[in-house]
Amino acid sequence: MADHDFEPEIIVFACHYCAYAAADLAGSMRLQYPTNIRMIKLPCTGKLEIIHLLKALEAGADGVYAAGCMEGECHYLKGNLWARKRVEYAKTLLVELGIEPERVEMYNMSSAMGARFAEVANEFTERIRQLGPSPLRGDGAALDVVPATVAATAEEGQPT
Image (cartoon, rainbow, N blue to C red; front, side, top):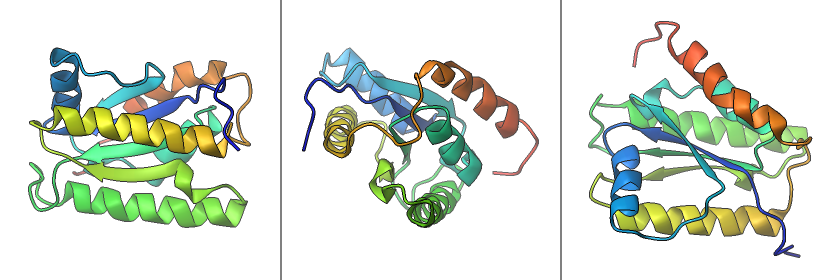
């Protein structure tokens, strides 16, 4: 049952070329999407590791999604395909931990899809609102460390 007073904390790992640009376009178009979305820009979703998804949840996020280029159109060739596999694997780990796998997702969009970015943000927020607060959620203050943690691990020189 949905608690309409509950505002989920959502982390979005967005690729620089497509999803982040789509978010920028959504803002330029003045499209409405929830203010609880926290964006982390990556050069490519291929840089997104399973640990980043799990650490975001551990830090208090109620939901996490990766937003990358359209399949077959990744600027780094296969980065978004790797990200999709990692997201799917993270879901299997969440099931094993007794946490709803619906809290993690992967979306694809082009830089011209500002309306799609806003639509995904709204739909995912509603999905998480239906699930309720994450069982890992503390006071949420730890969410401030998520971008720094991701930036530090993303710069370890892993190839994209």
